[in-house]
Length: 428
Ligand code: KE4
Image (cartoon, rainbow, N blue to C red; front, side, top):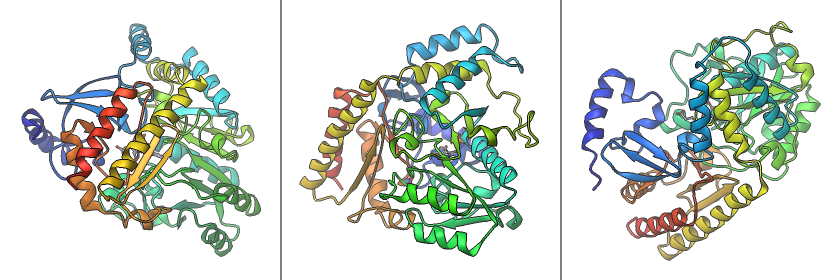
């Protein structure tokens, strides 16, 4: 048994001060039970909790830390930037450097705006799509999570799905009146939604690889089909790449699948662990954004120098092809080990992997959308989660999340993780 004495005490104190003792619901362990370890530090592929327990981290703050915890280049850039003040409320050169890096890696983003979270990015990009098209209808997918803006809290994934909250109280029906929901990987349903709402739909937003119902890949032709349907219905295609951006591929899902969205939302990796989001895309659309256009969006700390330099040093570290070959190799080793352990212990699992993202389901059928994801064995996941935590493997406390690796995860971590899967599967 893990000694979590200090975490338990902290969780008691936190629960009196913060709803659920956390500042983001999925961290509360509600769906797996038990006390969340309070983390004291991180280094490379590892984190250590306040009781001294050490874990290989496959959460990496739900994606941002693709170079691992406390990467020296990121830390020293932050130290230098902090000594020059933490924010100016004025343009600074790092905004230009990061924007150039993002555009070089994701050329469909001809112009962009930095914000402070993925939620801000998707909220703003949807307002922009509505402003540009003059049509308020948006199509989203069941089990996709685009942050907590009112109009997205309809059959969302991630923490909303984890907590079994189909929607959220406090969201007026007027706020979601223009939000239409379709099943992921179902082009016919999308076509029917467009047909039933002719002339009303301004945009379709999708996680091109769904990471908030577990990891679910687009079926062959799905993304291309969305592009065609948006073109045929004079709607904008928005890729929410907050999670997949610079995670599934050096150029994101839009490069991996060679499908060109009109607009893209980013977050996580581009801030290297500091609060950064971004939205961008076609220049003719982005020129509607204030102050050059009428669509208003603003933020006190948007583009602040600390967040910018953390993002710059993070993206600089994932430029080379061998970094991506390294992710693929780590994934192959890990997946082979997991599959062998599952076969040996007759555990039905579905494994998905793309780039530095991985997901698996305790399910004997392929998982293609939220409905099939939800048929996975949640009780088995709960037991699995805690056994792996005891083994020193830190996974997201929910079946509806993805796992992430970093450049700091190497052969030793893969071997230790496979051994942990083997011992855990033997007990399931
Ligand atoms: P944030 O506002 O949490 O920075 O980003 C919202 C968001 C938007 N779009 C996608 C595809 C996302 O995955 C997210 C946030 N992801 C979750 C993890 N599934 C954040 C973790 C949390 O809520 O604590």
